[in-house]
Length: 388
Image (cartoon, rainbow, N blue to C red):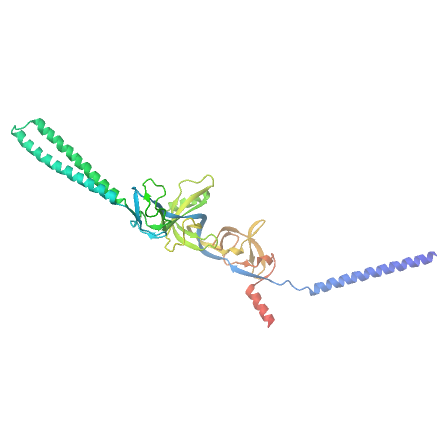
């Protein structure tokens, strides 16, 4: 009985050992085959570019609002009936152009009255002066008294003052008559007509007749952070021409106009920590319009021989910005860099790269450090040959 149990245990041990040996052989055979047939990782298709040196303008960009360079509400200066309106809404007018006419007849009558009064007093003055001359001769002959001569002298002075007052009244009446013809004080574009012909208008009216906005040239008001004020003033203090300013569409970056910086406001807004600037831009095509929001780009100078690369090359990670640089075998490595600025799709690098190095500018989403790469065009050409 004992012998039979021992034989059975020995048989079980042999079977278990055989199964274990078989599993070990199969595992070793499988791994070996996998190692033998594992293909090499395919290169990652990317687009690359060479780091270059070039002169780059130095820009500061802020949000701006387009405003009329000059804006005038045309108002009447005398009371009367508005005879006619000589402009159309939205018309471009020149300075001095007639816009409207108030009934001039009451003012013409006032002028004629003032002229008549002046003529009367001038005639009286002429007669008084002749009497004055007679009394002056008679006093020499003791034919009149000194008191009578003094009285005549006073009358002449009184009439001279009256003639001067009459002249002032004539000038005033002419001015009032001139106010009945309303002209454009500036050149620009008219807006909505606020009063129609036939209405009685008054000098005290608040609405006016029309608003004229000068839109060529036109102004752009924009803001920049207060930290930039020192740099801007330093550049201005060097002298030279006014700093260039460009107005760009906010959504597409399209250039709408270019002009010059007129003003850096004389104080910083403490609530927003920004400073306001004003630029004047030619606007012959009316691409800029009052009330429009734009991006205003102020050019401070040029950074000479700057290291540049397409902005798409710059990646951001936990440790800061980096690019994928390629060695001679086109193997990628993550290269930390410091970005001085990014503008117009170009990144200016001041640390981390050298001129002539090649970096990846497209296809980084599949890339990891240590992987080999191939240009998109090369990969396409290889696929085309394989298809043939």
